[in-house]
Amino acid sequence: MKTAELFVSCLENEGVEYIFGIPGEENLDVMDALLESSIRFVTTRHEQGAAFMADVYGRLTGRAGVCLATLGPGATNLITGFADANMDRAPIVAIAGQGATTRMHKESHQVLDLVNLFGPVSRYSAQVRVPEIVPEIVRKAFKAAQAEKPGGSFVELPENVAGAEMAAKTPLKVQAPKAPVAPQQKIEQAARLIDGARYPLVMAGNGVIRGGACEQLVRFAEHLNLPVATTFMAKGAIPASHPRSLGAVGLQARDYVACGFDRADVIVCVGYDMVEYHPQLWHPSRDKQILHIDMTPAEVDEHYILACGVIGELGASLDGIAALARPQVQDHAGTLRETIVQELRAHRADRAFPIKPQKIIWDLRQVLAPEDIVISDVGAHKMWMARMYQAERPNTCLISNGFSAMGIGVPGAIAAKLVHPERTVLTVTGDAGFMMNSQEIETALRIATPMVILIWNDSRYGLIRWHQLRRFGRDSHIDFTNPDFVRYAESFGARGYRVGAADELIPVIEQAIADDTVVVIDCPVDYSENMRFTERMGNLVCPI
Ligand SMILES: Cc1ncc(C[n+]2csc(CCOP(=O)(O)OP(=O)(O)O)c2C)c(N)n1
Ligand SMILES: [Mg+2]
Image (cartoon, rainbow, N blue to C red):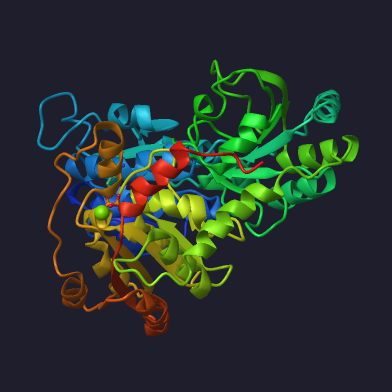
């Protein structure tokens, strides 16, 4: 058999359904072997798009998304999306071609040391030096990518190895470790810590969603009568409408939820990862007791010194602690969540144009069903979405907040639609982030993944302007001109709509969903709300 055939059969053995990517001269053998495979290759228009698709596939399925590129420039184009997955703890495997091993020791056309280039942004990075090791390398790559915490694995396949004939081999058995249950003594210690607390508060991170422990989290909060804040990446881990939900935390600036943190004496961090929200921001005083409940030990940080760590299968830890701890008598949560909902509600009939962020989010929530998926790109729009969008279920509001790479929105929506074809998928994006990967509209149309792309149009790098105004009172080099987004969409064969008044937004989104194709909506946004928010939070009086 040819080495490339064994490589592809090892990918099938891992359950790979899709590979996103762009072929090149150095992976001709792999591309040809894929013709005989059950794996569907999704040809993209930029390797970055392919990596973001694999990233979001990994977020939604818990299984590694796979992307492929040729050597040199193809592989370097993968890096941003790959690093995004790695830092956001989404399992991803990137495969790149490489020059023949007979020319890798010298200056040679397009040859870069990719194993080292991917090293700092991956859990595992390896070259297939000889055909016999293909089963071990592929197994190891998937095992590393899918381990808690998940991340990226990179594999390069030199062209002469891929094309080499070899004695037939078979893939290795797929085995995944099961997380052990935390020691009972730690569960008891955690329960005592909660019993002794006056104002305990739970902060849930993306690990709760990855660990499939959302139900246990809600039970834990209900049984012990504890308020739960989530990070941006854990939105929906507890329904936003749940009486114990405090909403999402993660703004660098203060917010109502910060009031809950100020008052808390014990903070129960569940599946929390500090890349999502640095402890310095929510624990500057360093005087609170931290209970860390996770599958992996805590990262070292001077603002994250533990009173107790409970390491083991998350759901079992939560159930175990809930069974032992005493329920809190008082409810400390209600007013905080209500304050944010009131703020949203206050703008529901706002007819101002351009449209205020709060009104866009209110309307969006009216139109989308609880199971529908919103993917946010990165910018000021993300801050508003993260803070205000009321996610009722896990993985229905996807936000990159580890690496926070612009450009995830459009390609991410393609992957989401492949994973959940029965749901509506909508991207909320800035005008700048949209243009970073808008070429994938062609991919979406070609592979028939309908989606709505809602562009918040401010003709600026809005978030950066927000920071500049806050710091210096003036902006610097953040303006640009946009194409006509409606005609741009139409030139691909997609549909385009422009929102011309506040009360047009709901009917336009409804029409876009009904169109059942790729639809771009150009929605002018009023970002003067950004500084108004900053001023309000600067004068924040805690509603508790
Ligand atoms: C790839 C990448 N480049 C730069 C940044 C830094 N950055 C964060 S938000 C932002 C502006 C985003 O502008 P836009 O997409 O229009 O969204 P808006 O802030 O206007 O809502 C920039 C430049 C980033 N996060 N990712
Ligand atoms: Mg913008």
